[in-house]
Image (cartoon, rainbow, N blue to C red; front, side, top):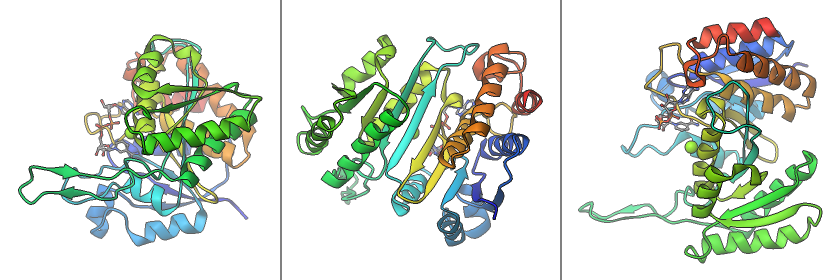
Length: 334
Ligand code: NAI
Ligand code: MG
């Protein structure tokens, strides 16, 4: 039977870039069955809630989803839909690879870094959120567990082995956040001993930011806690031409959700300006997860050629074209 995939088009630029990715998948002959589901502002309008049960059920059934960015209203007691999805399906590993394409406005060439972000704990665990009655004080808890730290660090080393990568850098702030980041670093050091074939280094997060900007070629695999991974992966996207180039996979034991790293980009929504590469590369990650390497490689090559030629690229890449022209150029290549 055909592979069924839950598709969430999402908010803002989501529908445009998801449709672009679906056209690309069809063009390389991927014969999936899609179940479309709502989440985000669209769902709030259509169903009165940000994350309807029907959507959760469809993700549970298919165990695999491709999703566009979702707008989480700020404040107003809404918990982030993305954080909820990651926790609900225990999608503990967030893989955020960045690679250079020639022909972008990026500052560097030959960047090939993957951030492996812990996706369920840390500052995003959602525990202990208190705001005092008069609004003058606020606090929240960060929680790290040995199990959570170990599985993400092991994931990073296994990924390094599988993909022929040479080095894993654990990024932390154990000098200040002694208990939480301290536990993460301690566990990471223990795991590192089990992988003598991979070079292991550690770096404090603020220095890591500076090093990424000054000398990014020293990095290969980065493994880190939730908040640091969120921030560092946007920084990494900036090394290769921006958020339009950055995909992310949320992976658990038996469920995975593929998406772009960026948000719904309200500033360019509905203007045919979004670069769909982010979510097309997320679809590539999905194909790799499904062991469809041939199709994945075809899409990557076509992206590379279209971006390098630069004839019909989007504004963020230095071109003058829209989402639809860029997609058309890709479809012609394929
Ligand atoms: P954003 O990532 O949506 O946009 C940041 C900047 O990058 C904007 O200038 C935008 O135009 C640009 N950009 C993003 N994607 C692009 C693309 N594909 N092509 C060209 N330019 C692109 O971040 P922002 O504005 O802080 O957040 C907007 C909304 O998105 C918020 O409601 C936030 O909660 C949500 N969000 C959702 C995420 C998700 O669903 N995974 C992740 C991050 C934010
Ligand atoms: Mg983010």
